[in-house]
Image (cartoon, rainbow, N blue to C red):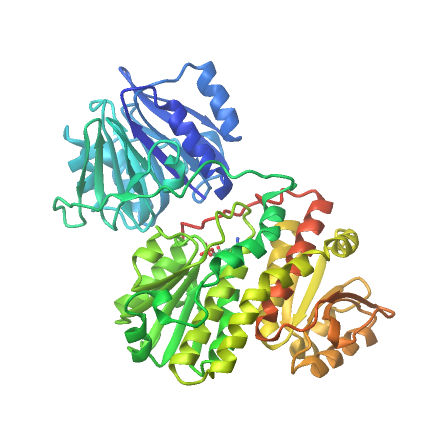
Length: 605
Ligand code: AGP
């Protein structure tokens, strides 16, 4: 998704800006650009290809300067063509980059046209550039402050003006923006990761903040226009670029990293202690009588799995809502709810907005399950649990999902213990199973060659059905999402018992039916569902626990999983579905790590 980098220094900062864009590339984008200030005003290069192409243009045109901004764009308003790529100029005097969406851009555009501004792009961004230009009074910081008062929507912007050659001004509302503090130079970015090579000292701007970067300092004002002091945080964890190693794609690497990621995420203690969620967790957990979990995409499937755990182990009513639906729905707030947001990035706009909406309704107890400790979600919640998946590059989430499941299982077990539903023996068993999980995952990863053999077959299909029951229904949903995201095969998931209520009509010899078959209490019911498909000539591809005794037969293809892994079984069963999607996509030759139209971190609504 869109990315911003900005810098003011006493050296040529073009390489800093391009390196920042490179670090943000994995998020997905369809055009990019960079602008620097020269004596005549801003100069820019833009490309609808990759950052390497932009780099070449920059070299050929000898673009250099000590003050600049850069951007990767993921198109929302207007096609991914050069005219719509950022930086956007106003009257060749001002350059601006923008993440987010301006909702009232049409009325602003009319107002600015009346003032004589000509629009050359289809973007909503161009109205911000002309608006700031039209209000400019010699003080860019004050002008941006005034201009954002007229914007409705979500945005992070960085802007520079010809009359202030050593100044970059930024502002945020609903989209992240971070200031990087250097020595005699300062930076701005939508993600601290972009500045990893330049500084380890960051200020995470708050909603409504406006900042001014100059050579000797950073000035910040809050949403009410008052000077603000923000904490400078040392963040050294961003490190260098992530290497692919022996793997073909980051997604494959990340699938195989799951044993390590889970080991790092499982709490060290041999018991479930609420303090892992924060100092106040014990008190907060004692005050709640239900959970409301908000998330999007894969994270919402982790939440759905957790609902089964929370209700069966901790006996606590749990509701899961898609964040983008919850935020616009009239709901009945319950002050005794713990609102849990689940997110890999911690910056997903819909989930952040849903969290804010829940807070505005009076929900005071909030918890983030997140993979990024410095993210907005972690900063805006009372409690948090950090997963330690490490940076996930592939757009299709894999290790983030399984570590979220671990975190949510720990939450369920902790609440069960506090509520008197977990005996000492059960607690010891759960801890033991968690500790053994990485080894069990390794045995599932060893099934890759068998899955590759199936993927050849799948790569020639255009549709697939996924079935699961109970705790494994969300795993079927996740398997179908993985397949559609990266192989572009249309895939739908159903609770297997629902088959006969409609989707059975789709079953023919041409329709592969992927089935998640753990040896749990619903196995006999699932076996009946399998027969319903076979009786209609459907081709079943079943991932069956070794102790289910489901074996290959006509129309029934089986990959034997390890023996049933109890309540943690979903964490094992999702892995072959990740591998099936991955190898099917490879066989179809898609861009696995950057599937079409998708972005890693969805920071717009
Ligand atoms: C997963 O494969 C997807 N790329 C997507 O559904 C993702 O899980 C969703 O956008 C939520 O992201 P988050 O976990 O960073 O909030």
